Image (tube, rainbow, N blue to C red):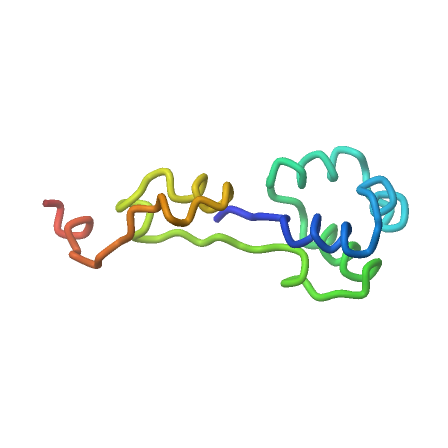
Length: 102
């Protein structure tokens, strides 16, 4: 499962805050902010601290990208989603070839 924190960065912009402000207000480390900047996983505790600090819900700051059959149809699916290249994605047509081995 992949994550995207684009919603968080947009929320910070909308509230005229910088990552440094969030780090200080939520009591986060620079390593956590760096991991989030690379769309890497962080603990639920970190996400809760951010939500408490910003007065928002989890789905206001993070998208969880869950991949199943789609990964067979387009192995680069997650990178394309993260880059906002939805039009470049090869869609799964549910032909079931990935399950039948053909």
